[in-house]
Amino acid sequence: MAFSRTSTLVLAVTSLVTGISASLETCASNSALSCQSSSTSPTCCYNYPGGALLQTQFWDTDPSTGPTDSWTIHGLWPDNCDGTYQSSCDSSRAYTNITDILEAQDRTELLSYMQQYWLDINGDDESFWAHEWGKHGTCINTITPSCYTSYTPQEEVGDFFQKVVDLFKGLDTYKALSDAGITPSSSKTYSLSKIQSALSTLHDGAEVYLGCDNGSLNEVWYFFNVAGNAIDGQYVASDTLTTSSCPSSGIKYVPKSSS
Ligand SMILES: *[C@@H]1O[C@H](CO)[C@@H](O)[C@H](O)[C@H]1NC(C)=O
Ligand SMILES: *[C@@H]1O[C@H](CO)[C@@H](O)[C@H](O)[C@H]1NC(C)=O
Image (cartoon, rainbow, N blue to C red):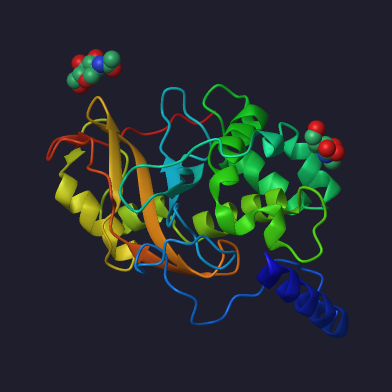
């Protein structure tokens, strides 16, 4: 790994000079787009094999979680550009103390946002966050500790949770549906094409994955390809790699009960 040692040194010197404290390797602005390049070498600037990154969301109604006018966060998952995926890639980094980690990094605003919008259906948010990090986050190759030039332990964990929240904030599913006249109702139903059309509009024209449970809409996954690393890289919307589990018509969008 002579290459990475050399570039680490160069970047460390650069950040001393510029005073930049963020320490993920800087990627070239023309970094290859994941899933769209023939390269099969994972690097700190190329997500591989998990080249598709999915920002996944829930609409939980049984029981209801979160605000009645918002979807909630499921996670950010790397997918092998084909609907298959790796999971639980590094047990040594499968931390279970996510709250402590974020607090130690002074990420209190992030934590309070997660407490409102990243909720476990059984109320065990801490375990849910740890599960999402351990199962999916540890498989994102561009945020492994070796990709940091002046790594402090668990730095990538804070970067991961912040990135998921930032992506979620840019994907307001409730509003996109509501703008298209699709609102929660205990009597109305909607067609898959109408829901897909509303959410593709939000997602730069790319098709999203829609999940249903017993004919009720309860999940959406937004697929991206990424140029550069998973934190600072450019996210480009891409079509779903997974077929919807919803019927083509008669889809229910059940109102949440307010707590
Ligand atoms: C979180 O857990 C890891 C692994 O046990 C430990 O090394 C780390 O110090 C903990 N972080 C905090 C902030 O408690
Ligand atoms: C599934 O939906 C049908 C039709 O709306 C309903 O009668 C049934 O109770 C639902 N089943 C479950 C397990 O929720």
